[in-house]
Length: 215
Image (cartoon, rainbow, N blue to C red; front, side):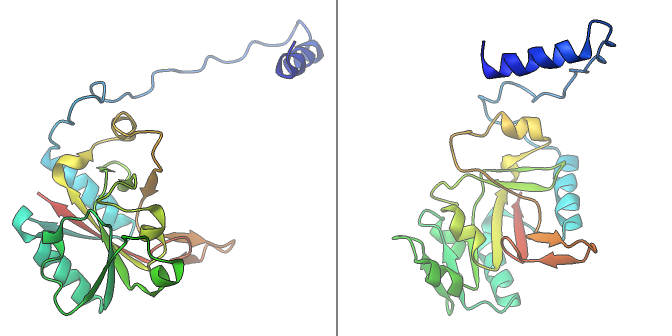
């Protein structure tokens, strides 16, 4: 008999034979649409609107852009926030950074030291997918997103989300994520509250999150 079986047997003996039966546990959980092996269905306009609404509710800034407007939007966001040094994963599309002339762009290849990461004003990355119902961007550290430290140490994070990466719910996201990869779920800027419910931002990650929704 295992230790677990022994503990459960002792609990059953202590409760006695006249114990009341436990309540039925509902198992009608929501499941993903499809089996997650194929490409996700194109999100509807309502799903994209929901993602924007939830992100903004979490105090993230959202900018909708066309595919040919990503570079201009990146430049505008970096300039608006007064950044000078911007980090980027090694595999980030260079065309996204094409208009950052006059700014120092540092690629994380080879990996920057933590002291160098701390000196970055912000970072630009892609994502694996985004979840509309929870306003969550999911990173899994591929070459377009970079290692976890790259998106957590700088105080400002701009994340590019393609419309076809948006899924409606958490089950849809889980069905498409690789559980063996380092997954980071980002719902707005990093924030926490103390015992008096005073909100403090930038504690465990970037104080500012900017999402470019490309559609």
